[in-house]
Length: 290
Figure 1 (spheres, rainbow, N blue to C red):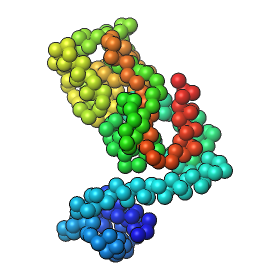
Figure 2 (figure 1 turned 90 degrees about the vertical axis):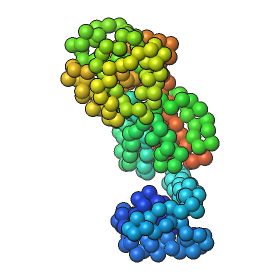
Figure 3 (figure 1 turned 180 degrees about the vertical axis):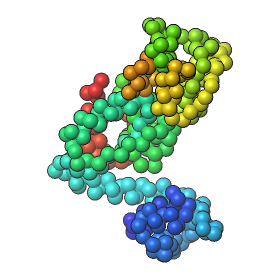
Figure 4 (figure 1 turned 45 degrees about the vertical axis):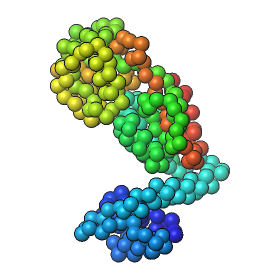
């Protein structure tokens, strides 16, 4: 069993298509098929069901996939560890983040890239659930979100700072001059909100339910930047963390009153995975931004 075969298997499983996987790996389809067949022969079980041009993981394939991912990641961790013996001037970082932490992330990226210009950084934005999935699949070095502080078999989450749930309005909106507002006062406002699946949406739905409010939701969107652009027209309002208000000088964040309206921003690390020195350095810079 070779690492190359495991990488081929993982990519084929991700795409459910040998042709697409081979193209992404810059190899021929016949090479990919041959290597996966050799892997199947060694394991003694088929890993894929071949159905026309599509392939689907067999039960054995589904069971083997997380072990293959872990093996490849461990190998990459070892290579990264050796490279970092002398310095952290080169390499790569894969960071996950929710849009609500864009401002903090941008500031830290600027400082980090000035110090380590040769480190390649990839940013993946997503919901808390999406980021957790990537963390458990070892596809991120760490994630910045509002995932609750906890320690599980696959990830561990630590606190960064607290942010306040806020009503986001245009500066010409009547509420823009208010020191604060309440959940009840949102009842008659035309809202554009994150879709269900964002942790902030689940939190907000719970808050509406507790005060028996049916909000006036005009639109639900899975892109926070688009929400802010719509609010910037002055026609709608939204509810986000105060830290989400980034690059929109015409918008105002009005804190929402309530004991549970303050949420904890966190950093999540995969468990049993080598923490790159560059990732640790980045996390330390994050702390200095607060």
